[in-house]
Amino acid sequence: MNLKNSWAHIGPVLAVGTLCVVLTPSISAQVQTETETTHGKATHDVQVERGEVVMVSGNDLIVKKDDGQIVHIPNVPESARVNVDGKQLSVHELQPGMKLQRTITTTTTPQTVTTTQNVTGTVWHVTPPTSVILRLEDGTNQQFTIPRGQKFMINGRETDARDLRRGMTITATRIVEEPMTVVTHQREVTGTMPPPPPAPPANTPILIVVSRPTPAPAAAAEAEAPAKLPKTGSIVPSIGLLGIVFLGASFGLTMFRKLRAVA
Image (cartoon, rainbow, N blue to C red; front, side, top):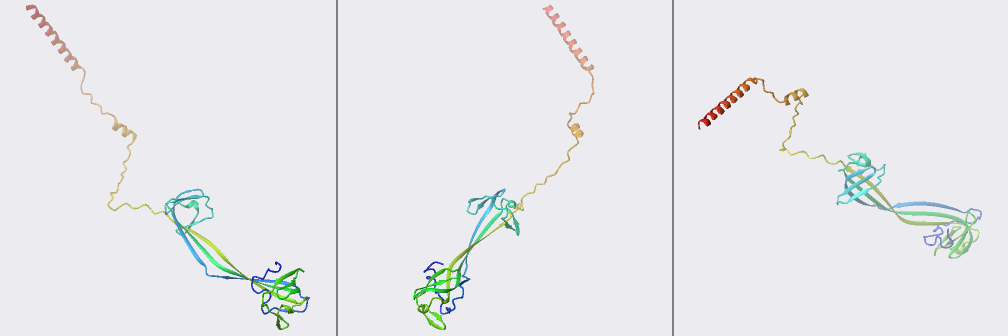
């Protein structure tokens, strides 16, 4: 606790209308603290981001967002999971073409933390009507500011700080209300498998492939060998024809010589 002004700015410092004053100085000082939190109406802000898986390499993920922006997400944690058609998939199970959607829900909740402290001490010194010094349990003295118009109950009689005397044991109540805001973020990533390839139109002709058996090597060699003519004649007719040619040539030369001699 700070001296003099430690509690002056937060409401009643010494018990409001119920301050108990005991004339027995032997009661030891003590501090009791109670805290209560009151929640206000929470507000929610939802952001949705969509994209398509382009590539997965180890723990690195590349996603193309709907606006065409390419986003590189390095070192995706092993614990990260994507809900795809009811299955929890890790980054290694993602496939190019998958559609991803990340939903970020930000919840803002106003809270008021009310802290109530009851301080019991023995009056060490009083400066009416502004302050009083109490001796606390640890043997130290602490000065407290008395709010304007503060009343005290002493032996069933309402009075002010002027009737406080050294050695009286009193209980003071301190109430602090501290407003604060709690912000939480919840992230959820879902996805869908890439769509199957489109079926061909109904009027598209269907190509049917028929396999033909491969011929055996021997049969193939036999089929590829050139055909041979049958042996139907001999060389004797050719020799006879050649003799007739020579004989004709000799007869022609003899006639030529005779005609030349007559001339």
